Amino acid sequence: MDRRDFLTTGGAIGLASSGVLAAVPATAAQPGPAFSARPASPDVAVIGAGAFGGWTALYLREAGHQVALIDQYGPGNALASSGGETRQIRAGYGEREVYTRWVLKAFDRWQARQAEWGRELFFRTGQIQVTKDWSATLTATRATFDRLRVPYEVLSPDDLRKRFPLINATDGEFGFYTPTTGVLKAREGCVAVANSFRRKGGNFITAKAVPGRREGRRLLDVKLSTGETQSAQSFVFALGPWLPKAFPEVLGDKIRTPRRVVFFVGTPPGDERFTHPNFPAWGVGGAYGFPSIEGRGFKLAPPLDDIAVDPDLQQRVLTAAEVQGARDFVARWFPALRDQPIVDGRVCQYENSVDQHFIVDRHPDFDNVWLVGGGSGHGYKHGIVLGEYVADRVTGRENNAELIEQFRIKPATFPT
Ligand SMILES: Cc1cc2nc3c(=O)[nH]c(=O)nc-3n(C[C@H](O)[C@H](O)[C@H](O)COP(=O)(O)OP(=O)(O)OC[C@H]3O[C@@H](n4cnc5c(N)ncnc54)[C@H](O)[C@@H]3O)c2cc1C
Image (cartoon, rainbow, N blue to C red; front, side, top):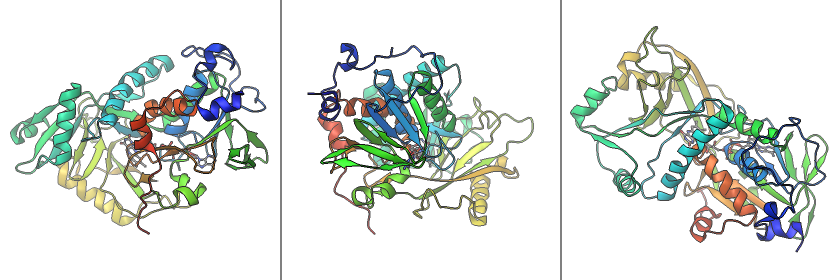
């Protein structure tokens, strides 16, 4: 079995330690050039430097593999689903306990990476969810939290008003507060991951990549928009909302990319009541949001619309109706901010899978091509764990049947 077979059949266990591949210490940053000399054919080419691809590439590199990480616009760019300022790292997942477990791992890992990189990317804001009833999901979340010992508080309507008087809850609404959750820097996190990858000897390439030559069930290389080709033993396409465009025959009707808008509302001068650490992340009235962090403003993600968009082509301009909707929402739920200006707004898109589970699976026509995505509006926080999972799948270290089933490309499609 040659090295190529190891990477495609899952026989790569122990390759790094056996010295077959150039080993890189797992934690020590490698000195040396920001861009390493390009190996003729790295073990793995990861296409897409968002939360999923970036972490995958970093873990592969840290495990000793030669890795090329390729992105058309750069890590956490303005078009990517991982772009923008912040993402919530919440732990409540109803019955989908595996995601809660991953979030608990993610908490520790983000703290370790902050220490490694000397920059603050994880803000433990806590999260308050305001609701009228114990939905099946919230009930299951509470049971999961009890099992996994995730701290939480149930706040009666009176306690909710006392603890969070700035939220204009209606009669009968109560609070579910999770103090250990928080907020992650999104774009900045992707840049930090890519920088670490480079420092450790990974090869970052800015280019658009499309599948190139094939030999039977093996992809030999990708064609780059620079005119070059990049060969590798295995390929991971972590293209986020670009996956259905790039692989329409496999994922065209299995990933949907609805437009999403977010707003930042200015906080009153000299008033830190809506600012971390004085205000938590929140889920209220069908929307969710964030305290102001580093002066960016109080962030609000209003309820979903469902217009599918093209991530390359959609005009990222907020409509007057969206702006008015945000203003009305703020006036209704956070009256102390009613007269504050909107200081920023962004247009992005989700990349939803049919069942909202992530997708980590081989391309059905190739033994050495992996498709990774389907973040479904909750993927950012998981990149730091999912990346290692993908790296281990690609190199054959991970074979948990339940997770393979959970993340496989399912037959179900979105209605056309
Ligand atoms: C508004 C909004 C709010 C969200 N809120 C949360 C939240 O609170 N908590 C949470 O955990 N998650 C949240 N999410 C979801 C989360 O951000 C995404 O699931 C996650 O970031 C997806 O990462 P990704 O790497 O799969 O995709 P992306 O970040 O989109 O990365 C894909 C990358 O592939 C590159 N690419 C595509 N095609 C090519 C090609 N052919 N060649 C080269 N490069 C290519 C792109 O340039 C891009 O950088 C939210 C998402 C949005 C949009």
